[in-house]
Image 1 (cartoon, helix red, strand yellow):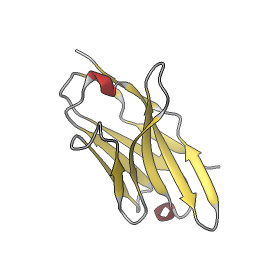
Image 2: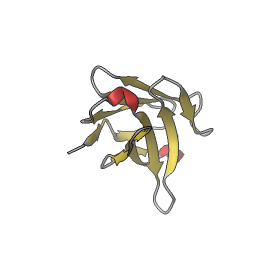
Image 3: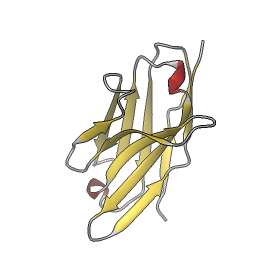
Length: 118
C-alpha cells in the first residue's frame, strides 16, 4: 500500500523557516512528479510547488523566491524549504505523488500543519 508521510510542520514566527519532508513508499519514485499543496481554513487546496522527475520545477507566485522544492530519489523523499514565512502561509501542507505515463497514479499524504504566528 502506497503511503506518503509528511513531517516537519509546526509553529514558527513570521520571517522564520521550516523544512517539510515527505517520504513516499512508491515503486519507481523517480517517475513521479512530486508536489506540495496547501489548504488554509475556509479556502480551497492550492498548489505550492511541484517537481517533475526530470527536475523541472513550478511554484505558486506567492511563494517564489521564498520556498524551494527538492527531491532525493535515492531516499524516495521530497522536501519543501520554506523561508521568510508569513502569516498567510499558515495552512495544512499536503504532499502529492503523480504519475501519468503508461499508468495513472495520484497519491496524497495526510497533511502537516504549518502555523506562522507571533
